[in-house]
Amino acid sequence: MTPAVTVLDYGAGNLRSVVRAFEHGGAQVVLTSDPAVARRAGRLVVPGQGHFGQCMTNLQALGLADAVREHVAAGRPFLGICVGMQLLFEGSTEAPGVRGLSLLPGHCERIPTEQPLPHVGWNSVEFAGRAPADPLLVGVAGPEPRFFYHVHSYAVLDAQPDDVLGYCRYDARFASIVGRANVWGIQFHPEKSQEDGLRILANFAGL
Image 1 (cartoon, rainbow, N blue to C red):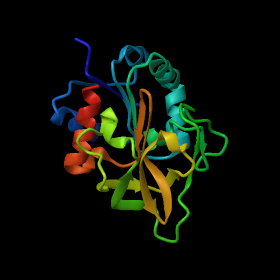
Image 2 (tube, rainbow, N blue to C red):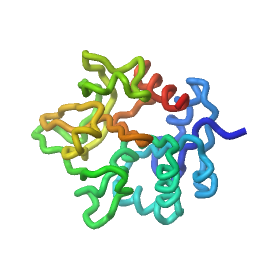
Image 3 (cartoon, rainbow, N blue to C red):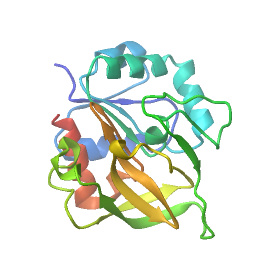
């Protein structure tokens, strides 16, 4: 049987809690570091915590970066979570010279704020106009903001407006949810965001 969701294990943190959150919603999950398994995945997820450069280096070393690109090129659903979302873009000032997956245009940078970093805790996400119709956000996005649990110091401030499904603000406004075709990214931790976060994961498993 083809697993509903394949989660990449590439040495980043927080993988098990993401797996448990998917399973909580009834999804069958495989956790793998094998590029061949990733290439066969129906739905692929890159979660992660930590340093952009180290995470991208690990993906490359394991042969998973190319597997992700091939998966996306084949039109199958892909989700990046936290640092996994940041890896969707071209690069980050956290790791100058390290190229991201470049699946979406834009760059990550340290959040310009006088408040403490990392940005930790619940913060509101304001949804873009097309967000309620996006399959990842069915039953979540609407005219009123929703709160999600964020933990990060870097964010995408220059995402293309057409790619942004939800914005958050920590002095600066940044993309908290992005989506284009079969590629989605969420900056917050859905597994820590209670009902709305679990609904997003269940929506992805059902794509």
